[in-house]
Image (cartoon, rainbow, N blue to C red; front, side, top):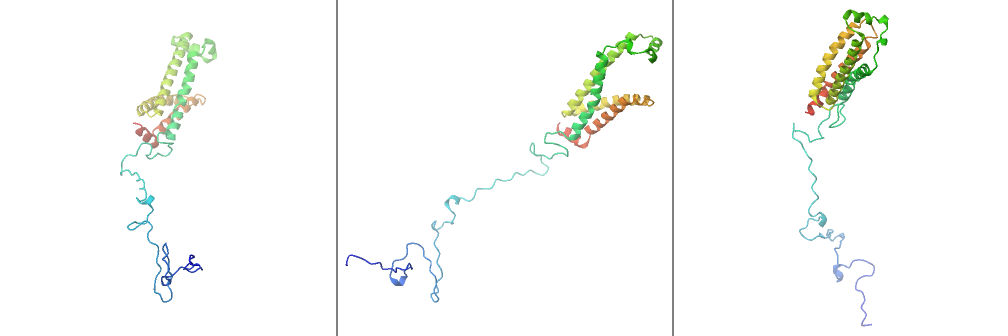
Length: 241
């Protein structure tokens, strides 16, 4: 019939060639070179238009710049909390183990003296506590003192001993908080007290039981002060200034 048109292209799904007189394909076409055509394949043009780099629009401005890494000048100070830590230190503000251990050793002596001083100052001392075989009464008579004067002196000595022990313990606590001046004062007192206890130890050389307390006091105080002045401890005290 005259009003019906028939397709001009082939019906087998192949592309019409230029020689067939058909219309050019709508999109980019790939052409396979024949044995004698000498043509090379043609690829699609840039879909983003001429002059474009081919990068999708969302990346047209380039990738986001990497965050610059913070650097510190050689020999410059580190920010707070980032500096190097000493061996045995638990943190930027943590104390070295030597400071903690030395503090515990330094508290042994004042703890003993606080207990002894309070017992002497508050316990009900009576003459019956000193039997005649001890020879206390004869010694008092020779010195011109009475038993009541002796008991009063013992109570006073106990109170003074407890007060000194409390002061020593407070200096140890302040030293533990990082005060170097308190540590120096504590060291001076330790040397003076240790000299006294060293004499007591020498006088009790023939009495093993009487040497127990001087040995404990001397040992704990010397170890405590030594740990407080170790390299780690000195560096920590210097950083706390």
